[in-house]
Length: 256
Image (cartoon, rainbow, N blue to C red; front, top):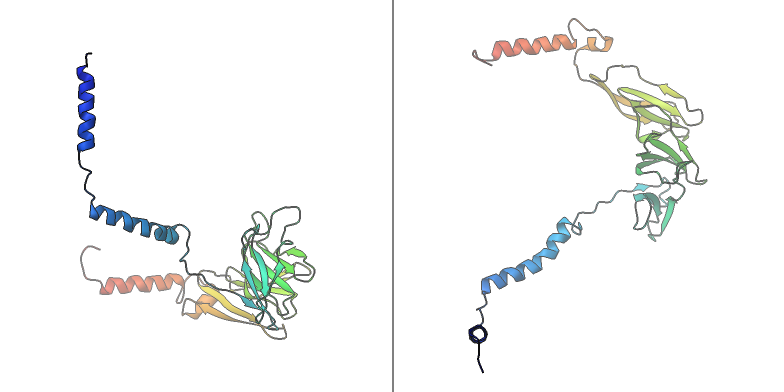
C-alpha cells in the first residue's frame, strides 16, 4: 500500500498543530476588554439614551392654588398636552389634550408654552403652527379653541391676559398693543416708532384693567431722539461723529 507525500505532510502538520502549546493569555488585553465591557453601557446611557440628563421642572400655579399646570408629552401621546396636578395628592388630570386640534385638520397643535388667565378658565397657547396663527386661546371648561389673529410680529408674554380675561397685552417691534378677544380688534398703545433706539418692556395690567404700566428704555441719552430728528445734537449721526472724533484724538498715530 502506497502513501502519498501530500497525505504524510498533512498528517504531520495536524500532529504538529495539536502538539503546539496554547497561546499565553495577555493580562493587559483582558483587563482592557473587561473595562470596555463595563464602561460601554455607561457611555451609551450618557450620550445616546440621555439617562443622566438633568431634568428640569416648570409649572404654573392655578390662581386659587388648587393645583398647578404642566406642559408635557407623555409616552405614547401624539403631542404635547397640559395637565393639572393636585399639590397634595399628585393626581394628574389632562386639561388640554385631545381637543387641541385645529379645525379642519387631524393633528394636534405643537405647543411650546402657555399663559394661564387670572381665573384659570382660559389658556393662551404658544404654538409652532405653520401657515396659521402662532397663538391660540383654549377654553378649559368647554374645550373650544380660538386663533389669535393679531397680525405678523405680535408677541405675548406672561402678563398677557387682562384682569377680565377679555384682552391680551402684547408687543409689536417697539410698540405695545392690546388685542380684544371678542372683536379681534388690535389697538396700538405706544407710538415710539423706533425699534432700534427705544424699547417698551415689562408691561403689566393694573388690577382694574384700566391702566398699563411699562418701562420705556431709550438707548440714546439725548432728548432729541424722542422727536425723531435726523440731524443735530442728540441724534444718532451726532453720537457717531462724537465717537469718531474721540478715536481720532486718542488713538496713537500710525496705520489703523
